[in-house]
Length: 558
Image (cartoon, rainbow, N blue to C red):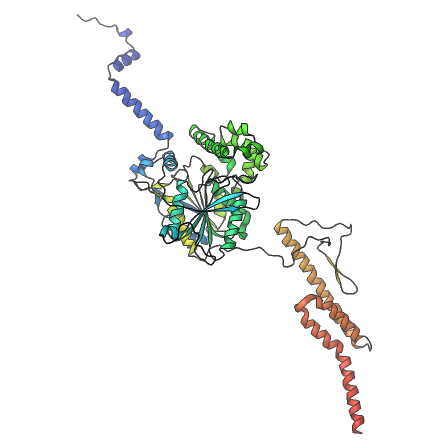
């Protein structure tokens, strides 16, 4: 006979406990796995399910540009890759998986660079690794540089990212792609990387543009017939954009591409220390920087805080103990602000394609200068929802990188267009100022004898020469305007004296000589005035001579 349980003694909790005890363990394991999968799907930012629901159509590329941009209208509008969709490799449908695959595998093409050691002006040494179009085609001799000075084959300079060199998988991908299509490629390795020792007390950093400037100028001087292009990746992209903004119209580069640039180092520094997954990347980058420092320990022990470098646990710590001390920056934030490329976007004067992924876990989308890129007619910004940091693998086998194809198509279209940038020097001064003891005040004074002399200010002080380019141009324009005004006054004054000279019996010859001496200083532009004065001032003498000869002839007839 069963014993009835009183109704008041039954609770919901008790019933749940009894029911759960009767379930097999496999149910609990399955539930745990589902919860773990959901957590990892969000934590690792998978987007496979989204691809599945959209039929693996990929995501469209968003283009930001100025409405009046000729670069977009004539070049980018014809690029099929930039107007298509990006579909990541399905089994790499996560920015973190893409980055891990890029760094640990990457499937780079196999080839051998030609190395050139280049010494910069401060005594430093950088490695330039070349891959020629003839190398890929198999028509050149090993170990010999076969580029002649009159060669018109375009040259593209690749600037790698932080602690990366020419051996990085993504660098080899872009180098091979460009060389396969007939371009000559040179990878500008950062100082101390690529197996080259540091030979000066100068290290590279996120804003160090001097090495790139010297390499570009040297290549332009040596291969003046070949158009120059540049591709910057990650920190290399920040360096490239900063260089383009510093140089403006003066750069000899015909075009450029920026891939996954950090743009604003202060924003990226805050971002990379925000969440757990970002702190993982911060730690990984720090390990790479400490490995770089270990290669040059004797030099950094003398120039920086080696104990602080060895104990660094973040990129900010490393920059505090190494970069700031070597580069003479007061604080880490000062270093970041001075090396930002975002401040130079407005002055970029060459056609520039910028590519960034909105899910980049290293260089956040918060730092992308949308408005600045939209205002500059030379820049087209391409963003994709996915892609990770420099990865962008596509295809079922992940043998191709999407941004490599996009950059090749853009630079090729630019190369065959009339929009390639040509080097311009803004308003060169035809009368360069020499560093002498002569008074440099921008005023002139005409003395009684007609000589042009410098006129000092009333207080006897000299005007300060401002080194800024626009101020120099304004100063030279004022000088030329004053000189033209004074020369016009001088001409009018001489014409009035010439009229008076006609009525004088003994003055024309003396006046003519004096005016000839004055006007001869002004060159060919005043030749017409010289001829006029010569004829007018010498006419009384010619008339007197003709009259004398006529009278003698008349006497002879008589």
